Image (cartoon, rainbow, N blue to C red):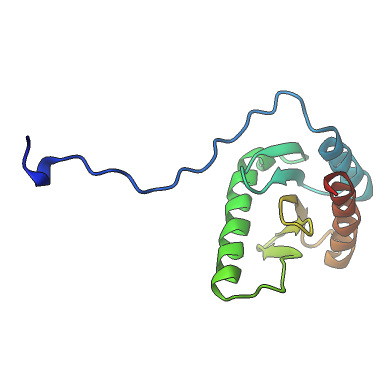
Length: 150
């Protein structure tokens, strides 16, 4: 038997569920993306994301510089970390409605369902889009995601 220091230690890390492959687009998510595109034709990108896995359920981009599928996993991680922070602060009667990231020329808006299991990710040019309008459009579309989940 090898000395104790040479024994392999068991890993105590919890593994995240693998990101499922979506060969068939989610029809509700696809409809939500199309509705957002119709209401905000000047958008740069939009995606519907599963928060737990980080998987992009449907997406569209008007900008070659923005890949909403790649951003989906990172944005889902932002939401998961904020949910952990809220749990650590014992904010039990609160839930995340949206998260806004303001860049020098862009607004990135994450609008979550009431259950926090899905989000709509939107990127718009800051000078071309009213934040209030973008929020209102996403609120209406999030309700479509909630109807299917509920």
